[in-house]
Image 1 (tube, each protein chain N blue to C red):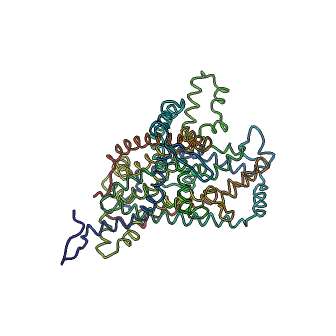
Image 2 (cartoon, chains in turn purple, yellow):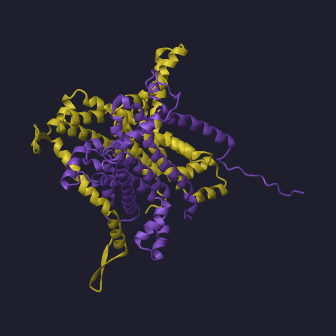
Image 3 (cartoon, rainbow over the protein chains, first blue to last red):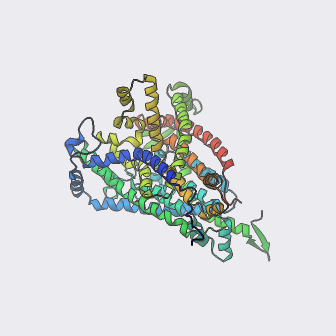
Length: 288
Length: 311
């Protein structure tokens, strides 16, 4: 005889009806957001004559890979080996992202968890720095780069990206949420301040810096930087690809393909980092 | 507060002093960048706004503008016919859009944070607009007529019309009066531009939701709290610091986006008409307006933000 009927208790926020509604809403908004992407992919697969159909068709009728083939041919024919452009962009992106992550987190950690005179002022300056759009500062920025002698080098692209204030602001807000007792415990056990930061602080805010990586990567990956870089062999991949599309109407197909190629890498990075975020809380040490 | 004390005739740092020192060391790299790159830029821009800039073969020369240097500012505010209108327009758009974007992105992040199949895919879809609005792809589009149809992320409301012309559809299939049709199509286009503009905010909220310790929910579940109570007593306070981040980010994004009429005007004045002094003055007036709004909004939200472990 069954004495206890184990009834499977539903989690409060996990009812089936709720799931259905939320998926429905997500589908609705998601379809809005996916629209441009679907169009971009479908354009890249269209043969040339179909690209010019008016009114434009949303979905491709006779898909072809000709456009991608064209891009490949153009790449092979470029003056500087195409791998050089790819190297430049990968180099700038990786160094810039790692540097930004490290410096922004260090600074954020100090601003959030250390008390010292002047920290409020420094934080206020950083928020102010957020407001300066790149258009407004373009010319002074160029003058400064030319005075320091960083024009035509990777530094002109990497250093400003490392000091982006948005990442710092984001990290600071997340670091505020780390329990002080956790950091104290580390200090009492004799960890140096840097170890406390790296081994206790950073794992606690993993979702924050994974998000930061996405933003920084996305910015740097698409950086053309042709204002600061003159040497052909230092130019970036987006610049090289924009040259392909500068061919006008005859390159319309290749341009569509280029758009898709440029999007693939950030999307991959995004998916990798997002699937990492999900595991974060399992390894987190917050127990209060 | 003492940062050091004398012990056996030597000055030694107290615990508080050590902490402050570590703090300064940690922010040092960022501070160097700020003082070396950012501040000179600001100073130079202010100088430009008070001067007439002449480009010469050797570089440029600056001479103080008329009316004690305030000529450009006065011209923007009192003579230029477009400036005030555009300034007010930008502020009005900001006040309409920012609350909607924040609410929508918070809502979307909550949905995306739930466990369901294919949620990485769902998240990626919400990230696409961020990808599409980025520099390279915008650059590609401007050089190409055809891809202007992909240009949705940039022009938002205009381009949805090229896919689904809401107004035209309504006119064809219904007999509604023209006023209602316009209202509906504007609403649809408005929703679209808000969704497109909230990619970054959704990601920030998502990261915030994921850093909330599950033990908090566990404890409140055991105590018998409902999902509604969990949301208001745990999720909302824990995410409030990020509401501050997102509000400030959204305000700045709305003011400095490349589609903003004011930004385009400043850009054309500086780069096309090569009136650097006048352009800088316009930019500074604009900047001061943004700064005031940010200060007020920031103060209002900061008061209500909850920090888990505030000292």
